[in-house]
Image (tube, rainbow, N blue to C red; front, side):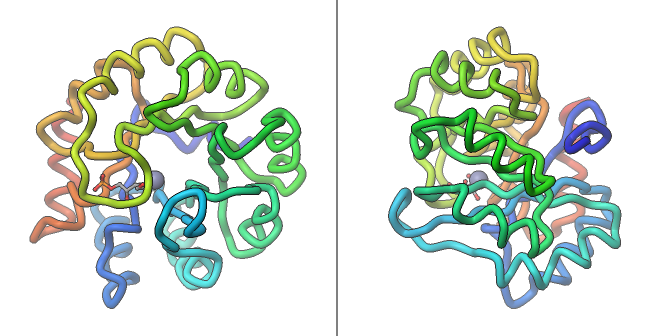
Length: 224
Ligand code: DX5
Ligand code: ZN
């Protein structure tokens, strides 16, 4: 079963969107050696979010490396019509797909479509979307619910202060994993975890640092 067995109480997920793409394989290997097991992979279509980010071609190149190292790939789909991408992402080595509740008029159907491809599945929601709406969608059978702590699109933004209250509300409304994405760093990761998140996505808080393994381990240690 997807996600069961992937989470060691809490996971710090390196967000590969923030990587140096000339060094991608090398950076992934360093993080696998440092203990990272769940890698976050951001797919943006230039429509649901302004930028086109990375997609199946890159996924196909790195999936064998991550799987050989015992890791999994958690795809965050910042796209319209997410189900359209499921077959190709599954074939390219993606392990789970998280789609935005704002991009799905019938989330229960989209969850079922992800399962048909053997994928784990999550529901994401933007800062402007009601927590209750997202929780209701996640309770249709998702493995995780992703509370965005920034407006999605770009790495390197600051975590919005109202995220803590939204995480707490979400934690009370769902049984699945609670993920947070955007502006998580070593100053706030403990507070984000304490608010109820067990999947902590970190982009620039790892990749903008000089020493990636040290940055990853410092985040894990900050969680106790
Ligand atoms: C942006 C992506 C994030 C991003 C996080 O919308 O969804 O995963 O890479 O980067 P940081 O941690 O720098 O905010
Ligand atoms: Zn993301």
